[in-house]
Length: 216
Image 1: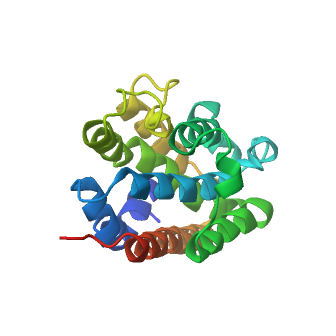
Image 2: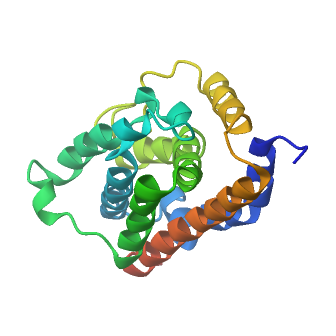
């Protein structure tokens, strides 16, 4: 592979990335056509995915492949829990319910975290870099549509307080991808897992779209 791995990863998964971002649910949410309940339900689904991503983060920090990507300023579970406490109240855990598509997504992330650090990188990349990029559009919509305080409760998931310059951070992240300790065959497996990650995320959006159809 002569081309930078980060470029290959982005190019190979572009179609899946576009499909995820243009799902009916996300289009309706960003267009302001759905209520705050849809946003809260989506936030619940994110909790299950990040629980799977971050449960083994401390152990993976010493992994030669995944270790460079485990950065405390990225961790989102605590912020999600603050958002859910705001959106659902202090007993939010009692009503937390994963969609079947979310269960499948979280299970795959957990399996990679336990058994395959290369696959874990694929899921880490699709989630965290997405949060730093397109996730900021969701935050802006939430603040404007439902009156959340700017960078306050309800949108803390999208606020990376430890990252002062997101563009520079993303450049550094891509440099870590370019330096990943993997041969060409393993890199192709990681690319395939990246596509799978987007497909799993899209399945969650489809399920949410069925639960929250846009009403005229």
